[in-house]
Each structure stands twice: as structure tokens, then as C-alpha cells.
Amino acid sequence: MKKEQKHETDYIQKYQDEGYTTNFLFDNGSLIDTDSKYAYQPDEIYIVAHHRYEGMSNPDDMSILYVIETKDHIKGTHLLGYGPTADLDEAEFFKDIPKKNYSKNADISELT
Image (cartoon, rainbow, N blue to C red):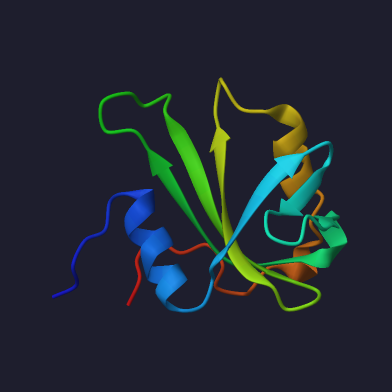
């Protein structure tokens, strides 16, 4: 039986254990590697997986965890809030990532 993972931190830890250790931040229209400070554009980002969450006590508390690999093979994660309080510029950035840059199995709800 699979262990159910309900929190973003469970997935973040699992992906960090698999080498996705870089933290990416959204700033000024780019996704920034917090280590190198390189500013990635949507066409330089590949989505390996993403997981959607709704808050247990507040359904408006929604987020998406993106598992990312960049054009230069940097691996990491980014947590995006969505819903009524979302940053629209940040949401548009992820909408601008070309569909071909998404893994065929990117939208997953469980880890094996």
C-alpha cells in the first residue's frame, strides 16, 4: 500500500532526495535560480511533474508544486499559489512555458 502524501513538504523532500535540490523563485518576470541568480525564461524551463493542493481547512489555500529541470540541467522545485490570491504575473509565466516542455506524465496526483 502506498503511503499517502498530503503536504507539499512531503513531495519537496522526495524530489530533493532524487536530486531536485535547487529552489526557484519568481521575480521580475523570470524564474530565478536562488544559487546562481540566473533568470530563466519560460522556454528554458521543463516541467517534470506538478502536484496540485487545496488547503484542508481553507479551500482558497491552493498551490501547485512544480518539479523543474532547466535547459542547462539544473533540477529543482517551485511552489506556486493559485486561486483568488494568486500572483497573476507568476501564473502567466507558467502558462507561457511551451506545452512541448511538459513531461507526458507531468500532471500526477500520487508518487510511486
